[in-house]
Length: 59
Image (cartoon, rainbow, N blue to C red; front, side, top):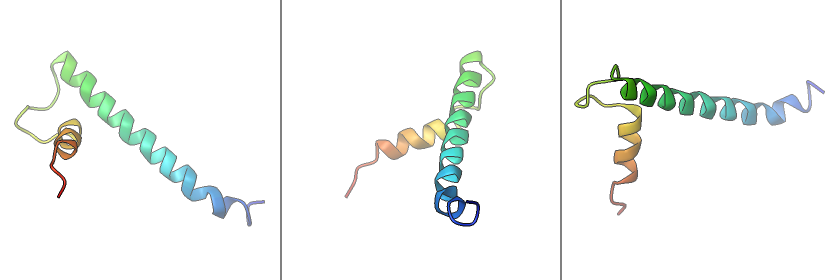
């Protein structure tokens, strides 16, 4: 089982784990900003980067 099945599903587990960690990081940043101890608005943040990328005009 480890020899045949794990190599075929390992990438799915790693991608899912990374997506959960990244989304949790954005949530933590938002909570800290709500409390008032977040990053300075002039600095780049994960949420700001995603927002600016989604608003960018596509060629």
